[in-house]
Image (cartoon, rainbow over all chains, first blue to last red; front, side, top):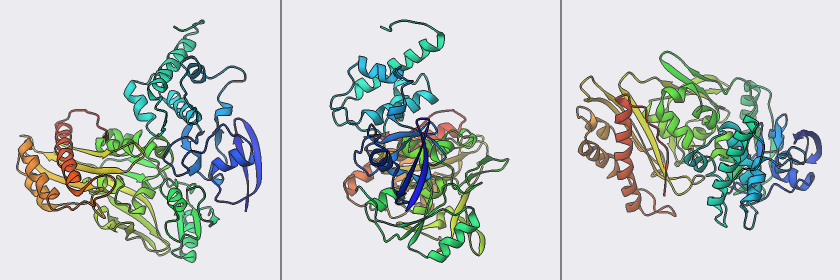
Length: 166
Length: 299
């Protein structure tokens, strides 16, 4: 058994008495109640459990909690800035992206990591970066549109332009 | 698929402690680096792993250096870091390989050392490194040794690593001027292993005649497939489509890819023939100095 100290969304959490091999996903959901991150396949295929470690998208089912110590962990719960939604979340709502919605937290966390490293991705950049996130409702077209809309919104914000985007 | 089988977890502070621990625990202990192959395997209960030795944070094992005559990539360098490195800038086939492995999440965690140490017949690094005649650096309780990448993997999931040994890095001799390479896998989807993959490195003389070639097929046999006959057939030619097709036949005709969910043997041979022409053409353009991007193909 182990005790881990994790920095999640800017807050430090100590979780005692977990098996040393516990994947981060179970610590987030079962120990800390951060259930925005979803369990999809558990085998490293679907991307539903994607969170960020130091800004990089990783699958929380395939990273042990012990290995995530000392890194900045960001989950979907920590993406908004207080009440101000992340541009991706805003675009997701405006474009009605999800259907069943189960994969969306993982999609958004991976997309946020993409925009962090590449604020103006091309269609092929998006396809390539998002290839590890499966959506069984097939919402890929809207997911891509939302990422592009969020990218534009980020560019407008960077220029200090106020107002609604059409 | 949910929980891995229970195992004991160790996190040694440095390389020597890790090597000693691995030797003491024996062959049921596995080193854990990025965990992108090992953790899913443990979840599927493959093998009898009793102990995991976490080497993921050992210091100084993730350096990437581009020297005058060779590049060196530390075993713990992730695919994502390698894809963005100066080595990938200098060697386009390294960029093809590192940037094409699985998906962004796996590339953020998975390491080159883990990829080759697993000896998985479907992984990309070992075959790509064959085209560069790379050297694997190994360290064990008895000291250091070096093994050519071609001798490193002996069979499916089997390497020359002895109990207690770890890969610490790979060294890639830099190819001469007028040399270019490409590596492409053909995949059903990003997280899936390739149905088949081909890597080719070509070197030209000043008249665009091929003076050296190294070809490899991957994901179609228990280990990367190489052919001295195919390499020799390309040398002395101008690498026309017919030349590439003829050399491709020499290496493809004898392979007997396992029929599985990714396709029949005949189908995989067809994929290999197409890939061989595509990769050869890309390697040729790069050998002539053209700066072209390449990436894995999806079905």
